[in-house]
Image 1 (cartoon, one colour):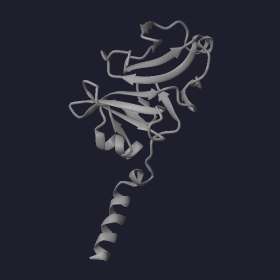
Image 2: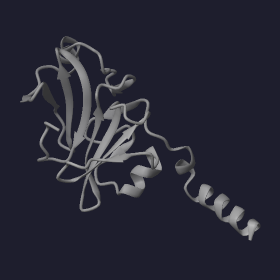
Image 3: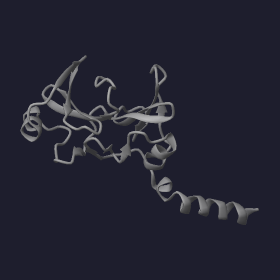
Length: 165
């Protein structure tokens, strides 16, 4: 019995090599229209868990299934996903976690002036307490969040999803 259990555990690790090492992201990259922190729109929960692990909390007050992947319990820094009909429709950072960037090397903590210098003038949506600026891309809705004129976070949203989270 012990040998069979060990064999199954090894087989599971070999079948899903990323799952054993998966953990909530400390850092990630926004690839506009493609992915955030390696997670893509349309992914299933199983695919997200393979990338980021199973250490997440579920939002109790959200209308849709929303999961929070925080590095440390009860500290609101990390990333999240919203799923609809079992598929990712939004992936976003939470509370300005450090070491996240875009493919053009815009980082969380950079000034809004650097954002404008990197991407030019962007459409702005005023949310409660922050602004959402949309990067141009036809594949998905990529958003940079700004608080007090500093880059605070990123999101990749399915077209038509609200930028204010």
